[in-house]
Image (tube, rainbow, N blue to C red):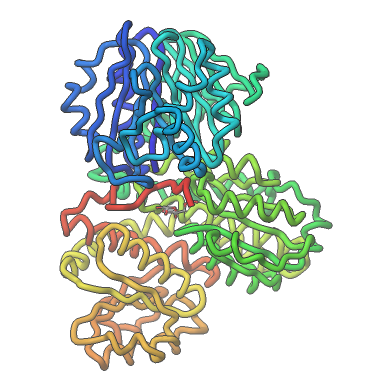
Length: 608
Ligand code: G6P
């Protein structure tokens, strides 16, 4: 979704802002703009399309001189992607400039009132209302004008604001949309996400809801929405700067797939001590864990798919009933929940609007929430009662890979911990699980070694029109993610089906040459899935199967087989997903697409 970068300091602002925006491209956008204060006026440039267009217009920022400015990449919600709708938006005189991420829900009502007072609107956006409202309230005190506006608007916002008669200040505010503030020797920054400013500083402050920051070149002040000054603690970002760079890979997605063994290790190893699972961040007593009656897992997209897997793992190992639901459904369903239930929300960004709302809904009902989150200090991390961070580092490619694998293993650890506390996992089983979970990073590494084989196979299917993914049990959960990965980046229609459901409709779509990816990693379900493979084969399908090493018999029915090393069947997803991610990647590369920036998609969905 939209990206914001702002700078005020000793250096030229425009190149820093454009560089920062390029680091936020992964979030998804369709236009970009920048405003720089040149000492007398605020100059604004904006353009529909890629950031490269804006970079070209401004000669990489060279043509916009000045030491403070704001920039924005817009993902269209209100109004088409166009030069006019691109941010920054300004008041009529161009003396107040705003960039905004989020949605102003009452913008229509505010717009009508402003129009009655003679304000003219030039764009279709909700954001423009902010520029005019600031103009309306501005009587020489910018902080007062900003807080008055914040009291009037409903919805979500991360804001960067400049006033041309306050040349030494840059203003920021947020509610329900991410925004960080950074400080270095050379100046101060605002940004939607850490990678945008990582090159310049590691010292950041996380703005909380309805807080305002006033940045000068060498200091930052924070205020509540009622103009009360507040103290905020700086946080040091531990990521190394290279983690937000491509490091020689053609696309971030491939780099991030290659980081999966490390990501899985980083998520697992700090939580295994002296042969036991220790999840120190879990702020629940053993008594509370024993009393959990039901678990509700709520998430979106790929994070939801990790939840589907967790349902099988937790129900299988711990025998606690688990409901798993996409957050956009959960929040409006009036779900039946008991105060002794546990809610688990899973989110890479920690900012997904629907998932965040699920946290709040659960709190309203008196339930405790465990967040499994990647981005440190994100909204979900701050609002959940306990947080298990996944330590996957920055994930730049829109299609998630390492940030899918990390919560998966966090959920296995949680299941093992629950099973231990509740006496459902005996010592022998626990020892086997422990050994198997610790073997996963090396096994993933081994699977990555098959990259060329998969590339070769993918090249044969570059022109596929549709692909079906089938599986049973955990294999079905893997199929869901495999199909999503492929459709996201290759634009090939792909669907996942519980293999046993095929006969109830989907099999009518199978014809000569249709590619079917069959997941067959679950020993107990293996013969059933083999029967389903036979069914699609006899209707002309070409079958790629993913099976456990040693299951040679599958070669009699499938046309192409990828074997995964032996693991406990509960953990098979962590291995089987690797060939599916590589397969999707190479198909998209083969079709010539910009793998890291798939059309219409955003990395972090901060609006409903
Ligand atoms: C977007 C991303 C997906 C992601 C989903 C949930 O749709 O493109 O890759 O799985 O949001 O995001 P979250 O940050 O909550 O995991």
